[in-house]
Amino acid sequence: MDLRAAALNSANIFIGCSSGMAASCLVYPLDLIKIRMQLNESETASNADVSSILKNEGVTALYSGLSASLLRHAAHTTTRLAIYTWLFDLASSDSYPDLWLQIGLGTLAGCVSSFVWTPAELAFIRLAANSRLPVDQRRNYKNVFDTVMRVAREEGFFTLWRGAVLTANCTMIVSGLQIETFIHTLIILARSEYFDSTLSIWLSSFAISGLVTAAIVTPIDVVKTRVQNMTATRGRWTHSDTIDVLIQIIRYEGVYALWKGFLPHFARLALHTVFTSIFIEKMTFQQLPDFPFFNAFS
Image (cartoon, rainbow, N blue to C red; front, side, top):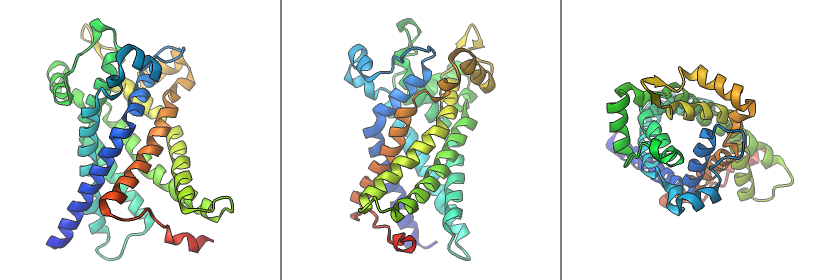
């Protein structure tokens, strides 16, 4: 790789990471609400309701844990794009990789990156969940770095990777399924007579792909959130393992509890993708995609 190509790749990684972080700031309240809903173990209405948070904790509570979210996104996205670029260069040494190979490479890169940066994910969950606990049970982490250091010191270094497999699975499903669903929806809507503008097709495709992805990923995400937020009482963990968490949710809260936080999860997936695309457009001084391949399916 020559210097020009390396500089271009670095610029693309920076733009992708910065755009994603900016989008994360806008949709973060949805992330927070999703986590609160997923951690609510009662069968009644969740205390994650926006009005409840605003009333009891104040407006700033909607952004509690934002530092961990930004670190998670920056570290994960930078690593994922770097790995993807490396894999893409290897795959394109003989011929340009087709679309499905690119999706596979992106999924693999996301899986590896999410596994490496699970500590940031765990810190994000802990910070977002802290204020929902009774005052005498709050961990009172100061920030993402304090969270990581205290977890390593108080619960063991490898606790930082609790839920790493679930985190990787979520990332793989989101990376592969959301892109694939988006592409297929895009093709179908482009053929439809009910959509007369590129923008409406684009936004509708993002919404549908987000809906399908959230429906499939949310159960895994609920279990992951519970696992990463587990506490130890008198030296014993709340649950023995991931399977125990899953069984306890179904037994005491019902099967539908696995979809707690579905709506904010769906909204977060769809809006984050849309905002990221808009920020990329502004940072690269390009217009939103015109989808030139529409003609092939008309």
